[in-house]
Image (tube, rainbow, N blue to C red; front, side, top):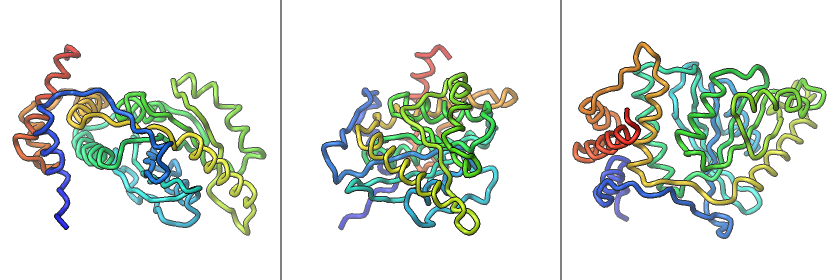
Length: 294
């Protein structure tokens, strides 16, 4: 069996065949192919309960919460899961922990975005975004995480479902939604569905009924909204546009964008791209900047 391409070789080969041209976004309909794996991005800031949510869905402890309070924006781990003959891959993806990022975090985010886009392109695109929010106050960081994944990564072309975690102390978990739905809309956060859940059984299984109800809600959500068309774009344009959008999250003190020469060096060092492939990607970024007048 021939060896698989490295991530850098894969993108370099793709760029060589694309002539750097930007194509329209593409959709792959998974609903008519039950054997196709559906890719579900689960995102939110550190401490939102993403790993516990994945364990709740799968029914066993497979995901571990990160011990790194800072995390790395767009760092991802994936977990396979089968529900009613549908095959899913759940991507536990780190979002923003602050509304702005520094230059080091920006460079790491580029590396992680490159890895994520390369893997998703190989695997057929994104079928559903699941925004994990811990029950509590909605903040600017909540809004920026929604923007990062819905707009930057998916160009508003993928359905977003909200899952609110940590609601075991609510008399009725759905009460949280009644109190906070208007506030979410005020932040511009829209969704095709929501689920108010708990991922803990509690001491002596005191929350077992809410736990089981939470699993049922999540299964229904995935079956209804995670089995349709997948979103993907031509790789070079997809990555270049994410790189451009991420610059908008830089702190004001570090808002000066890296030079194109520096970007080529970053892509070679961090992503393992050959120099010609890195230069082609940066050229696409330059073209996007010119289109935007920036």
